[in-house]
Image (cartoon, rainbow, N blue to C red):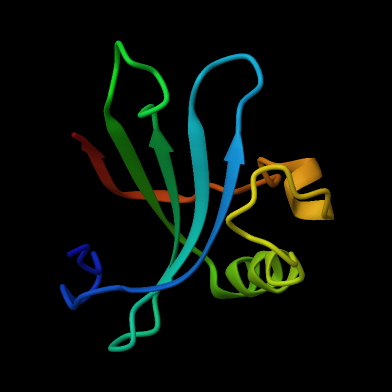
Length: 111
């Protein structure tokens, strides 16, 4: 489980939008996480190379972000009618990655 870097409580997963890169065999999920204990907000970026038979790994990066920035991007992403469909034509999928989808590094795993 992913822990909050501020209070060490478990983070809750809120939303994930799946995208794909045309120039390489990889799926990328943009994620929104939060801590119920202290209210900290996080972005997550999960890169899944399972579609590449030579490199079957997961790279998961997390970023601590400002609450207003998190809420704004979450509201925009929540408008997506089909978050798990990388071929969706909504604004979020069309413009991914979202501008400023980064913050202070919170976690980094490579499995």
